Image (cartoon, rainbow, N blue to C red; front, side, top):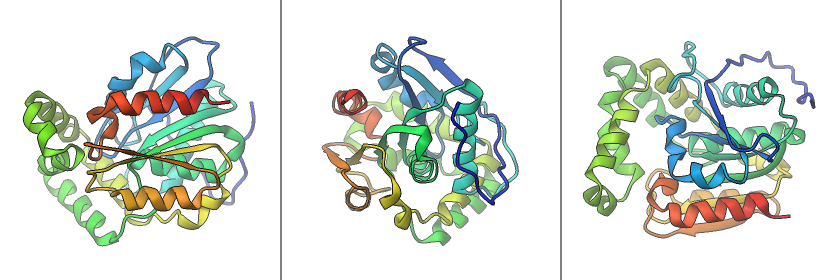
Length: 266
């Protein structure tokens, strides 16, 4: 097993909840979820991915069945959790796929611990999401009123209005997913996003990179993904039509084949 790069920072990793599937001898792909979701957000991809890869899905700290340490969190905390998960599973090197907060985590690991990363896919994410006050205010609302207070508005940013109109059951499912997120976990991750700025670290990423933008994403607009792709050497950009923030769920017919093609590319 390869040791991760040493740092003067004291690690604060927690043992996140993970679900592993697919052939034991296949290349490992780790899927990192968005703020307010669980590993189940990758359900539209899992059947196709687990036929080809050893797939590791996990719940970000403070989400799903993972521990909920007291916040605030930092992007390094989330990166430490991911690397600790690789260590726990005995995985020296893996491809990493992340959406939104998951993409931020993947960028940090790829820049900080390049020896642990084979290939990466960054979906609907940002290297910085200003203003910080918007995130600290959301954290305060959630700590005071719970994650249910923000769930309806968040889901309206996750999907296009046409999709939500056509899939009312999906709206309820995702609102419930967000609403069940522990308040401290959701708020702590909001605070990690508030202090995030990975822009100057992106040129250090050496892993082959696919960047995916949702054309109708109001949370991380296409310009955010274009900026990421421009900063990472050799990165490719895919723009997905008729997709908002959870492009993997709204347009799996486009996103899933793109993931597979990139992850299998020699």
